[in-house]
Amino acid sequence: MCAVSQEELNVYKSAEARFEYAAQKMSLEDGVYRYLKYPSKEITVYLPVAMDDGRLEVFIGYRVLHSSVRGPGKGGIRFAPDVSIDEVRALAAWMTWKCAVVNIPFGGAKGGVICDPSKLSKTELERITRRYTGELSDWFGPERDVPAPDIGTNDQTMAWVMDTYSMHVRQATTAVVTGKPLELGGSLGRKEATGRGVMMCCDNALAKLKMKKDGCRVIIQGFGNVGSQAAILMHKAGYKIIGLADIHGGLYNDKGFDVPKVIDWVYTQGKKLHDFPGGGDKQSSKDVLFHPTDILIPAATENQITTENASRVDCKILCEGANGPVTSHADPIIENKGIFVIPDILGNAGGVTVSYFEWVQDRQGFFWRESEVNERLQDVMDQSFDQVVRYAESHGVNNRIAAYIMAIDRVARALKLRGIYA
Ligand code: GLU
Image (tube, rainbow, N blue to C red; front, side, top):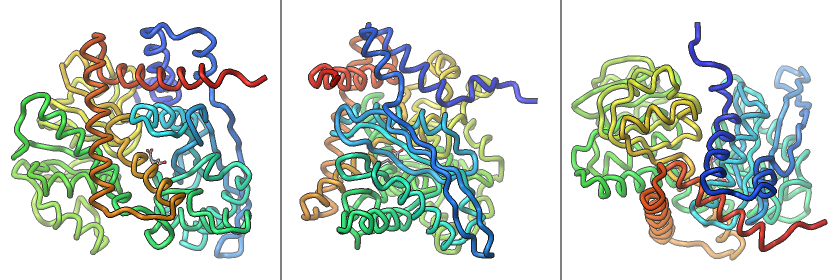
């Protein structure tokens, strides 16, 4: 029996609860509150796709544009079996707040297709992606809505989006999508960007809490793009990675993992993380979250920390690499423990920040050195971290609510300046 209510696990409700609390704290005007509470528009597409065995299958896809007040919609495309319209709505709203927290000129959007990429061939995935993009070719555009990778999609998926869109508009349009391969106008540093942003936030938190980096214990749940990049970068920087997990299971080793060896095992040899022979106690991917540690980085999916298990979290810093890993109902439990929280809309914003750099480079037709990308990312993350923490301290709210208030305020100001078209 599951002790956590469906209401708690509804990510749209979680996103809404934080928005409402922040709106109330900042006395957001009623009309603006109503405007920002709902998405700007949303669409469901039914995608007929020829499967490799000759069957015709129909996949359901969504795209939600939450806001284009500060610029074109921005946000990933998720391919997963449990994608739902509520999840996509929540993720789209989070993109609006995320882009506003790091002050990049985008609104928020998100898309998804209900499918299981692990059970589909590359050619089937290509046909799903192309049909999805074809159906949305009037919706996407460098000035309208710019997709990117998310769970279940990658740089190859983005290459297909770019190609399909370009065929529809009869010209090569690299800036329609970010997270592309380098050969197609991708940016150096984009692949590492979300993990790098996570590390930059942790570096800032350590400085703030006067903790030492060397030997600082870190547990990372999730070994996809975000988790694996955070692990490798943080290991190199001197952090001690004592816990790792992916969808199949977790590993704990208080002596710390040799992360390059784990990466080689999983990514070069294609083996399962929890079969890694280099030491570590096998456990479930949830259990790895509850060992004592200095930093805990949930970088997998939503709803990992709930009212049922939040009391078991034992860390000083919780940096959210995933979107929505802590339910809104669990927020007070984490807060009462005095844990320093780096909320998702700041913690994982490194990805969309470098997506912004990619979009800028594509539109300029001029590409930056990797060091330039990373330096600019560092500036954005340091400044955003500083602003959120200062706001929290000066207004007596927690970091998450400070980030929401700053973001909502930026969007509301832009909305006021634009006015309402009628
Ligand atoms: N899917 C990523 C996120 O949730 C990246 C979005 C983007 O780069 O547009 O932040």
